[in-house]
Image 1: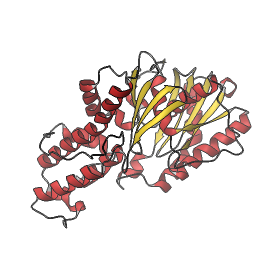
Image 2 (image 1 turned 180 degrees about the vertical axis):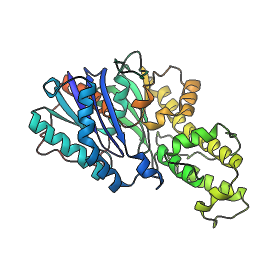
Image 3 (image 1 turned 45 degrees about the vertical axis):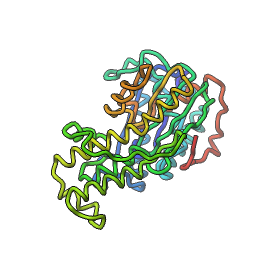
Image 4 (image 1 turned 90 degrees about the vertical axis):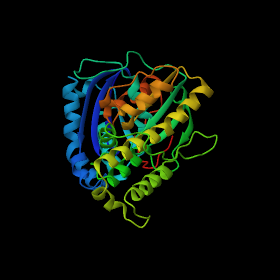
Length: 353
């Protein structure tokens, strides 16, 4: 069972081919991140235009890298939500057209679910990948942390899950982006903050964590505001001092300690809830997906506090990619999930789990 996965929910145009849900044959990603960096975040119109330019070459390269032709492909899986409307539209229309022309079954994929299924890929002949030694066991607790999503989900089996909690405002990755912009650090914010935090004191500032009671939900608006107020105070300024002027006034030592302290608190926020859920539900495995899953700090805190180890997937499969979409598509095909009418599949930018 070979499935082609197409992913275009944000600024990466991606395609990958996975066999039987576990064997990676190809994973091709064309990013437009450099086009967005000067704006400090993704510009939807620029992302959509980039997808149009890249999607056919990316799919062709994915087939070539996997050493397969279209007759070898058993189905097409495509992200139809959640994400940016214009970006999703390019991927979905491409997948619909290919499904019709190549006469292949079509599977609609929830992008957030796809991040978890990256962890089911355990083998490849491609160079440069470090993959889990075995697939996760059910029931599994999944933490999805990225620029657009922060969710905690309990899977009893494939396609049988319970959403335990989600963010009330910004996703954790988005919070990192905004703090990085405040400190004058380049986009994307997560890696920039992690790099600077190495040189700072993670306990220099005791930023608050949102108190949402006995729930599994997250919130990052309070800590973000606390960072702003702390930076203003460091400069002897009140709350009227504009955030965009902070970067020029703060010293590198101040920035480093603010970055380290915010990183610690933001990661503690999601790890606290993960440990709480683990203790309540006693899952057989814990997996983490999304771009923030690459964070050394989140891996350090989980290793220190979780009672069982996590087999992390390769960093290249944490960020948006077509392989995770293909992996989930494989399980939909293998477990006889309904196929989608390629003439009617629509995008769902606000799709939730």
